[in-house]
Image (cartoon, rainbow, N blue to C red; front, top):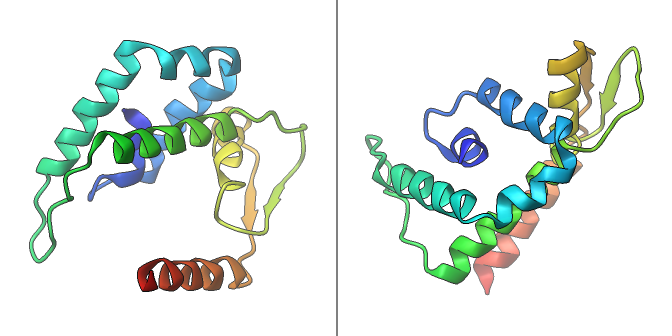
Length: 139
């Protein structure tokens, strides 16, 4: 629920992702259980419903999701949690070459150890995301 709110809420503050990602990092063997437990699924559904109720001027409400769509989002959050749990070697600086998945363990590393993060975006990730979105919308 915390990951969902931190990633998808209209007024999401990225710093709210620190705590759940640090929890994942410190409890990698508990992530699977947390996502398979009924309380995890129920918390996810409650958070999803809260997000659907958000209203923002000049924006559409979030569309309703059926069970397969909600399950797919839940599985994506599981991978976010697993990625955030990846251990990193102690280092002086973390250099990320994209703002995607690599940023997740870096957020936990910075929160835990204070390791500085340097992000270099060459535009490839953004361009690929745009191209992917265009091909998805075309079908």
